Amino acid sequence: MIDPNDEIFSVRDILDSQLQTRDRRKIGRVADIEAETRADGSLKLTYLVVGPQALAGRVHPRLRAFLRFFLRDRFEHRIPLSEVTKFGPTLYLRGKAENYAVGQSERWIAEHILRWIPGNGL
Amino acid sequence: MKKQWLSIALGVVTAIGGFLDAGTVATAGEAGAKFGLGLIWAILAATLAVMLLVEMVGRFTAVSKKTYADAIREDFGFRFYLLPLTSELIAESLLLAAEIGGVAIALSLFTGIPWHTLFPFVALFIWILAWRAPFDLIENGPALLGLVTLSFLAGIVALGGIPAHLLPTLWHPNFQRGSVADYLYLVAAIIGSTISPYLLYFYSSGAREERWSRRSLVLNRVTAIVGMGFGSIGSMALLVLGAIVLQPLQISSNTLGELGLAMAKPFGITGSFLFASALFATCLGAALEVLLAVSYNIAQGFGWEWGENKKPVEAARFNLVMTIFLLIAAAIGLIGIDPLQLALFASTVIALFLPISLSPFLILMNDPQYLGNKTNGRFTNIAVICILLLAFLVALVSLPLEIITGGG
Image: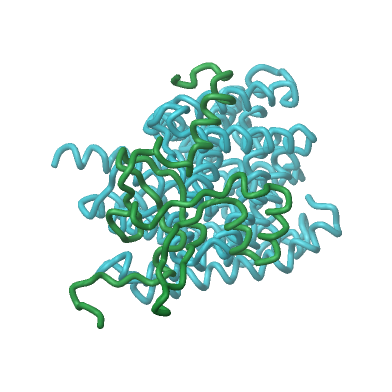
């Protein structure tokens, strides 16, 4: 039974949504969603997935397998759905940016590439 | 209230100064030189379209607090997003190369140094501005300098106004200097150069950088209509100058530098410098806008941190993309194609892609989920669809012809 006070979101609403952390950092967008079948037969959404393989899969399922062969899941990251405090076009996350593997490329690029360029603001 | 009028005035002035770029300068000058006043109508149609589009994208972002790229990804999904993204990357890398080349040519008109030599330094200068300058400097600085384009009007006056023998070319263009294929190619290029989609990505990101809300709607409407309306005067004035000065000289303006002759006739050496300053300011402003528009688009589409008011390390992916895209455009420019030809070609390619890049926008503009009671009216929808279709069809016909005949 659906409670009329519950906000209802479809998978389509969550896919491609902006992920924003508690410290107001934009870390990425939802590329895919994982779900598991419960013992009672119901389906529960469990994880938000972000990564190039998941994105490639949105273009064509075979592309996902193809990319996986090269990247070996190295850049695929999952965030438990329970981390989301507020749903909508932007998904607000409980933790700070540093708590999530998603979006670490931001820091990696800053520390390994931009650090060599003058005026980088470090 | 006083502050709001001040920002409206600034918005209008920058829209006027920022209207022209390498593409509009190239198309307007060449159109005048080849067909007299026969293509003024295309500038008018394109100006109407760009007024409507800029008003829309400002309204969209002020009301929904989403940029255009955000909304494409969220509403149409990742797979669809790749389409406008790819078309942007192709068209805007060509255009950015042309804009950088335009700045280099302007500087070579001042210094006499060949533009090829200046090109890498100009690219570096643009990168430094995009890397560290705050948003309002990037938006307003070159645009204020760009007001010098209004000197094109003075040029017409100094030459004694529009000669009577040119007036019939308004409705009966002269086909002696150029073929029908050239004419169609220029129609597409004029529309493509005026309503470049980079404007929409840039303008909507700018509205977010400046934290626009529903209260900004008046500012938005006035800037779009008055600013773009007056801005097109610079473009039309250059076309008229081309028709008065270049057409009788049998110059079909094959390079941006040659267009400067149009201003040298009325004002001598001062005219050449005025033209060079106008070219410098408009191409510099446009180069920054194109570069940032593409970087904004990618960062927003993938959900990364972005913004010119952040330090580079705070939006590392955005700044890395910006740097790489500039390097790609610089590499294209270093091949050595003349910026005028490149700008014409890029503008026609943009016209060809317009339906891909702007149809999602029209759909979003009619979605009350984003706009509440501020969705598009019927006139706006129909007018924009007609102009987009016109641009697309003309580009589709003329681009192959132009490639076969070798351009120019």
